[in-house]
Length: 278
Image (cartoon, rainbow, N blue to C red; front, side):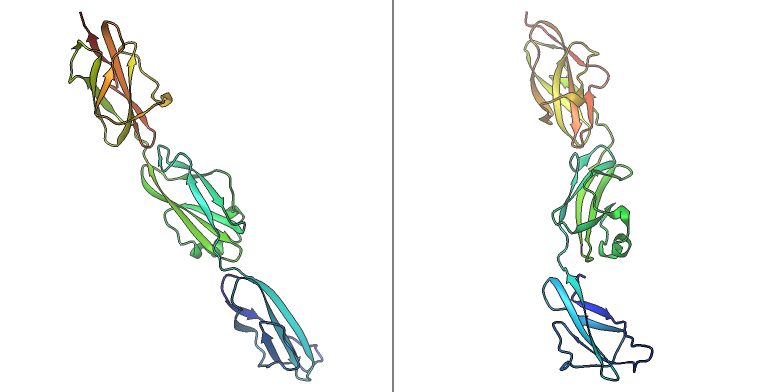
């Protein structure tokens, strides 16, 4: 149990030929049936367990009308501490896939049940349905949660222990399945340059946070944006050095959202500029 206030359920009976149950006495510690304070028998009685978590014993004396006495006792564990654990979204809280990959951890061994959901649930209200549900058993394996589409979401897990305590852990997640877009020009639209040192002007879609500018072999060539390393924070006027050698040079950029979606800029063909130092 997770509360000191409990209900004692008493099953009282005497032999068929006996005088019948006449009185009961109860105590939170050992009880002396000869000196106990007896009361009228009842089937149920409100009781307050002693303070502090741990094993609790309630002792009873049952007396029939003839004066015969039988001692009884029962033990219960009081646990008022909620379970503890963690919730992590694989890939971070900005993702490009609405089907989240989620890991749930527990730091207290008594976290026996869990329920993963979108939103901010009332964990305590779902307790009666969870404790007897085998599908709600704690599972440390990677979980899947389909959020259905783009947007800002709250993802939560409720952890439950056998005593009925619960803990809610929540994380904010942004889902963005739309690829970014963008364009670029060099030296404000120049087609010739006398220097390898140029300025690449980027015009990306909103929410682009990173970029990578690359020299490519020809107008149709493109870097593999998904495989690139060395991404840089978005710079709308980026200082770039062209490859050495006279003639046509081709430049493209990869742009990336925080969620990891990437796109080429320009989309259709690389920007062409001729290096002429002669």
